[in-house]
Image 1 (tube, rainbow, N blue to C red):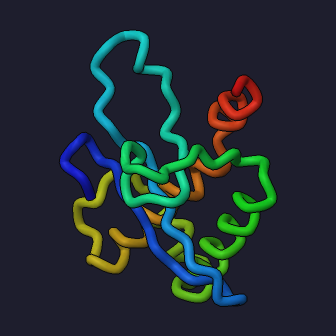
Image 2: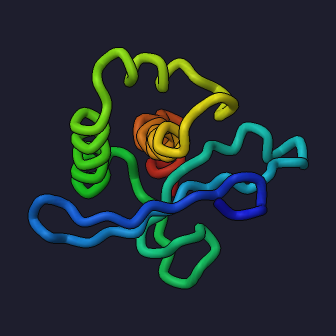
Image 3: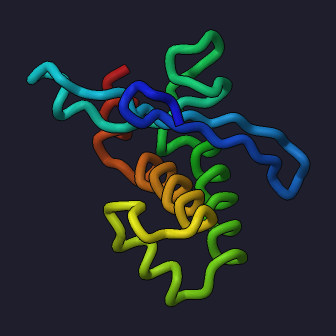
Length: 124
């Protein structure tokens, strides 16, 4: 996690052997016009401001594939009861390191499911 308010990244390889680096924008929002800015995802870099970082349209085929890969991992690693508990959490207090990792990955899922990010993609 970066010290900019909470930006995180994940690197993984899908079932076909394609490698991905995906970053979630977690920069601190201070200015009033920034408060409604969604926590969207970027592909190709570890941080959204790094060279090569490209906005990831949540409605794109690539985003759907990344979402499927993340959810597949989540389903394999956690029983349904644990998944429900993690999906309801807003804090990492009391979680194991593995559960914190899963919670961070869920933030990527939320970014991909965000209609605000899809709206931003449509306006570009």
